[in-house]
Length: 216
Image 1 (spheres, rainbow, N blue to C red):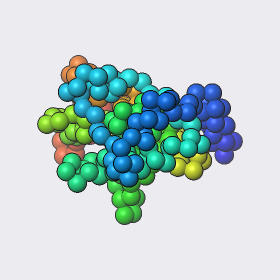
Image 2: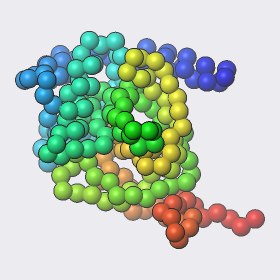
Image 3: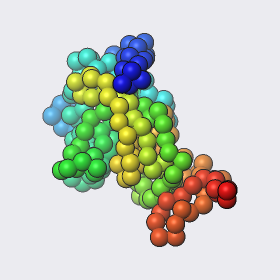
Image 4: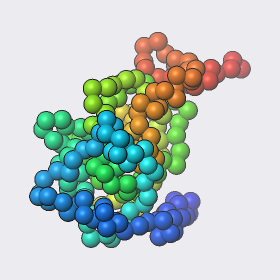
């Protein structure tokens, strides 16, 4: 309990130091056009947009007056009937702030939830390989290795500090979206993992370890 309380205190201190309000250009973008419609999902095929997608994002001030509007327009972009997704990060709509939406397949009803300033603080050695795509990367998909289990700290939509353990496919979505906040795309992970050697845990399931276990 003391360790958890200390984690939350450190999280609040970190947020207080690094959180930033939206810049003028970001505020203009969030309020652009019809504010009841989705923001445009930017693409790697445009050089200027790629630069945004490859930039590292900063923590958001949970009390910023435009945060709710950004979240609403991000959600609409993610659930665009023409190209729906199961997660989205603020950089994908041109805003380099640490805000993501994730569909929680590990919860009843599989709800979509908003996460502010998410940080993965621990990852399992057990890896899961699965196919990924991205709303910002048209016509490309591929297999990516992700940690099977992660520990996540974040602020919920009310600004309350939270921490939880997440497993399986939902953990994959969190890793994909938090990578966006660091300027990392899933195609970057694919290239990086070309040099990684893994050992299957079982021939029947798609789980791996990066290093072969030594026999005792």
